[in-house]
Image (cartoon, rainbow, N blue to C red; front, side, top):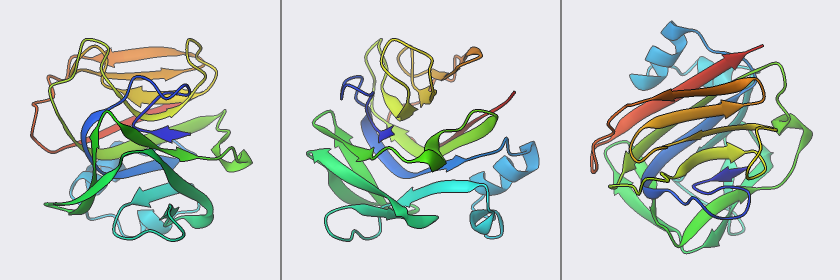
Length: 181
């Protein structure tokens, strides 16, 4: 799984990411709204929370998931940690991303929710990956990205959904997508 790039290290996100989360179920509208208001403490202890990466601190050169130490996010290339309105954030300029090693907990086939706080820059037509666990050119996993440009797209095995979100460069936004077979 990668945060900020695809499986080949391309389609790199440019901007800031304050958190990235993966749940093994489709969250409800109310649960996603609570996450967007940062009022979801109980949800952040939910057993369906597979990965919860924030960037307050690192251990042994990696960001440990608050959902458990089994999924450290290791920097690849240049990663800067900066202050944001919600705490620390990654600043990605296209030179780096985070990589989480393969783990069975990330193999979600029935349902999932991908969720993040992002502050994109103006993105090229190809957009940039936010969370990606698919092999490039396939839909053999799941991904949430900004394609085309500053729109949003979810790709999973059963299909693709796009939304012309018109993400404003330099503005923080909560993004989330769910899928349930």
